Image 1: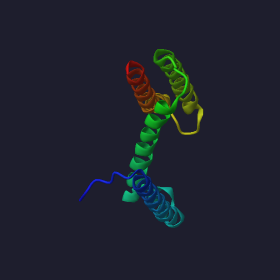
Image 2 (image 1 turned 45 degrees about the horizontal axis):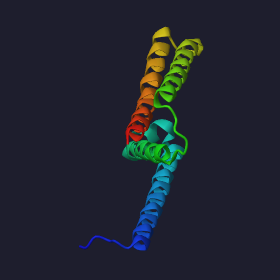
Image 3 (image 1 turned 90 degrees about the vertical axis):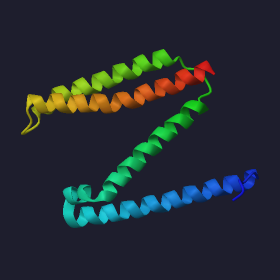
Image 4 (image 1 turned 45 degrees about the vertical axis):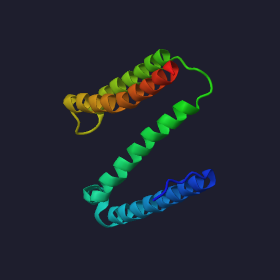
Length: 139
């Protein structure tokens, strides 16, 4: 099979892939919506499509971050953005960790665990964005 070199055909192929992805995502959401109506939240989360949907969403978010960093017009200081991101993530994690034990049926340990999970899950995109900006600055 020959590699497509015509830019119009490449663009059309990318549009076709995007449309297939949109249709696939709508189908997955429809199936998960049906599972939610029939079996509730737990039934929906037990469906393997839930995992596929979450992995797809996370992958799309990371790929979009790469495009948005490359599309930035002004040169942002990677270290300054990293420090701001770390500060915001830390404040949100600590706030969640402090407020969770005040909810009904939660303990201090639940607050620590949820705050830690929020911190770890939020720090990964901040570090990835820093890495992208740093590598863009070097080139």
